[in-house]
Length: 187
Image (cartoon, rainbow, N blue to C red; front, side):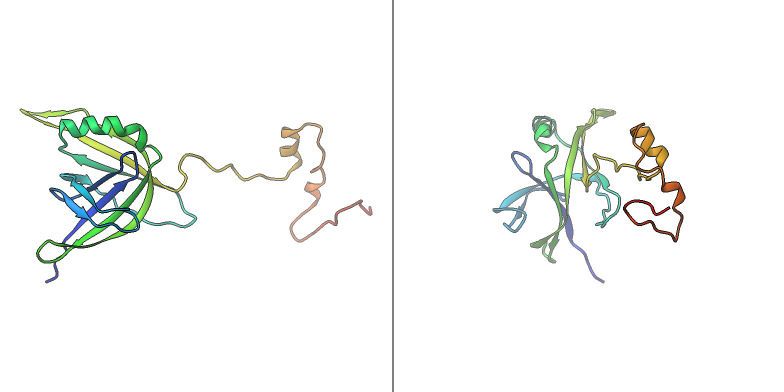
């Protein structure tokens, strides 16, 4: 039976860069194309939600949310201090593979996103314990702008934009399968 020993690695290129993984405890990540020098990834504790992502071409921009639960009060304070530099930062997501002895084999970076917002949940009291959560919203593609609707070259549309412009007044006479030469009309 095959065993898959892996951890999700997230690097946020904010100031200073944040590097964490979905396992427990610190993890040494060797320098590569994403991490410029050897760095320690902080164990994220319990990543409550690591969403599935897909790479689309000419598709809809993707918006995902990562949630880390059970963070300390100090981690919440650091997240609040660094929140302004997180917006717009590059976010790389990878998979760290381990051997049978849980030694790091390598990290394969799978996707690049852009950070949109970092939010802190209010401490939820469950009896005597308090559970804090930090959520990071990331996007792929341009999700801040909507595309303009299709434009139609009709006389009515043009007259709405400019009441005295009659450039499209003959469009109604053109039907599928016909063409009109540019220049003066022979009729």
